[in-house]
Length: 296
Image 1: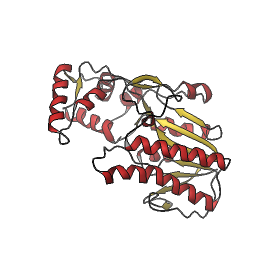
Image 2: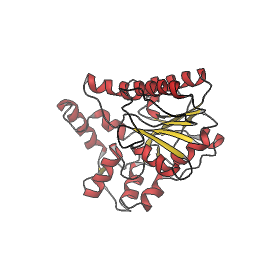
Image 3: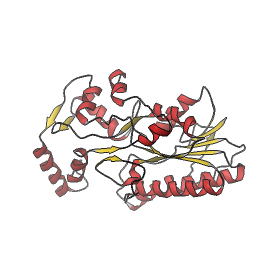
Image 4: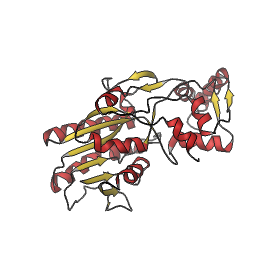
């Protein structure tokens, strides 16, 4: 089976390549150091072969846009990049299967419990909106071309050397300046990159829209204990955290935190993956097991 993997050098893409390369012919596409070196937001790729399966993992995340050009980057990479790969495939040959890596950000929720795939897509931020547009584009194109298509809506991804907030949390714990807010009881959905990777060949011929999580949804206290190998972290009283947040509101964009960020940190955000468990026999490893065993 010939598999085209976009975003092959990214955090998730690298894990997918590592897990699948032994049993599948993985053809990589990325900005550099890949079989196809293409900036999808700017170019339509010129493929010289056909593919059985496309895993479209290329995308932009892990940043908060502060200017209009930065906001537009999400549209360019996540939507226009998807459009360009579809145009390239129309020239080289329509694949049998297409997997689009999306995000739970499409739901537009900052708190909630057991949010499933039937929840309305209410994102209003540039990242979430770009993923909604790309999802709709993939579904329309695949239905038109009779391609079995899968949309995977992923929460926080876990693996070696993670980027974004999780990477910052690990660094803070290692340096000794991390603290939980209150008792650190807010639960967040997460999933291991390697478990997502293993599922891809299974879901590809089936298709559908799925949330994927580890099913445990650790809270900040559990997560910090696992990362620190059992060392208890400092706790910041909730009242003090809220004061810091309000101070950040006054300072503005230069403040590291504000009331909104504090509210997100102390709120549960849990997604329901029972559909994948029922239809795909999805049974991933808890991320806490990974952190307890991993040398960080």
